[in-house]
Structure formats: structure tokens, C-alpha cells
Amino acid sequence: MTDASQDMKPKSTITSYIPLIIIGVVAVIGAFALRDYLSFEALRDNREALIGFRDNNFALTVAVFILVYVLIVTFSLPGALIATLTGGFLFGTLFGSAVNVVGATLGAILIFLAARFGLGDKLKTRMEASEGMVSKIKKGLDENQWSMLFFIRLVPAVPFFVANLIPAFLGVPLNRFVISTFIGIIPGSLVYTSVGAGLGEVFARGETPNLGLIFELHILLPILGLCALSLMPVVIKAFAGKKDLLK
Image 1 (spheres, rainbow, N blue to C red):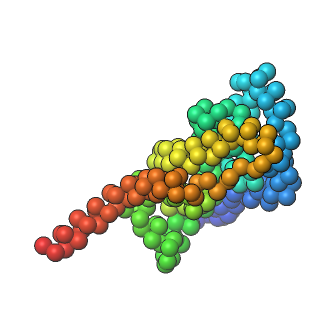
Image 2: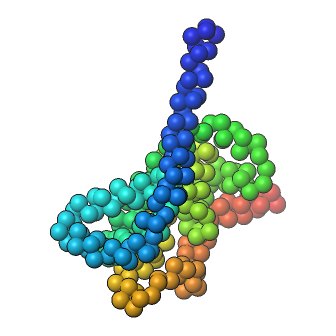
Image 3: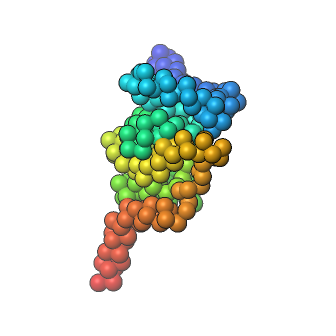
């Protein structure tokens, strides 16, 4: 190997970390600088101005809202839930859900690509050699990518940024990540967007919305049913494998 090639290798490695470093720095700064602006109180206090701007500039409002949502997701900024509520407040349940899903999916794609560009192969190798829950998820994704991708999107307990990073580190194809993200976040988005759509009445009563709604049984059970449905191919494959062993 020549001296020139040896010099190039460290530089390319350092360059690959730049997107994740930027995301990390902005996330830390944003956690302190923006927490008062991306809050329920900020939405409540500025609701009339937001509605007035939307009524006069609908297309621009949609574009700016999606851009802000993308930035929130990409940089893991505080306020993703508030953004989802705002989507419902400004655009109603159905259109608001569509806008929220588009913004969240675009943001997820950006952080997925940044993670893959920066740490993909190296962490993939380490995770393959690890033990415990991470290795189980890795094995499950390798053998049943579609099922596991939908599962980690549908389970409310899996943080959104975790569901963005794990597939990037495990070498999941981009098209599968995009499709499973877009479809998998629809149920949760519908729930919280519908809460946002009713914020006008909540504000009028001087109350705060029930953000734990997704964990109520009448909401949680259908989502858990979708989780179970997403894992059916895994169960069937495992059952078929046991039958083959008994022959």
C-alpha cells in the first residue's frame, strides 16, 4: 500500500462520521435551546397566529410544517409529539396524518442514511458478535426483515430514533426501510393526530390533551394486534422448522 493510499483511508473514515457528528451536536443544542418553543404551551399561546397564517398561506404552511418535522426527526430534537399534535390541529385528522407521516418518514430516511454512512459496516460487525437483545433483533431482522421492521415500528415502546438507527446498522435495504417506516407509523400517527385535531376544544376548556391515549386498551389492543400480525410470518417459519425437525 502506498503512502498516498494510507493517508486517504483515515480521511475517508473521519469524513464518514461528519453527518452523525452534526446530528449529535444539533441534537444537544436543540434539547436546551428549543424545548420552550417546541412545547404544548407554545402551541397553545400561538394557536391563533398559526391558524391565521395557515388560512392565508395554506400551501406554504404545509411545506414549512413538513420541513420543520423533517428537521425535528433528523436531529432528534424535542417536540416530535407536539409537531404531530400541531399537524392535527392545523390540518385535521386525515390530511394532518398524511403530512405527519410524510415529514416523519423523510426525517427517518435522513438519519438512516447518516447512520449507515457513518457507522454502518463497523457497527454491523460488532452487533453480529454481540449477545443479548441486540443480537436477537439482528438475527430476527436478517431472517425476517419485513416482519421485524414493521414490528419495531408498530410497538409504541420502541423509541422512534432507535427504530431508525437499528436497521441502518444492520444493513437493511433503503427501500424496505422506507416502506416499513411509512406504513408502520400510520397507526400511531392517526391516534395522536386525531388528538391534535381536537385541541381547539381542549384549549377552549383550558385543559391539556391526554397524551397517554395510545396506551388505553381500546387503542392499544388494535395496535398490538397489528404487531402480532406482523410477526405471523416469523411464527409460521419457526413452527414449520420445528415440524421439519420432528420428521
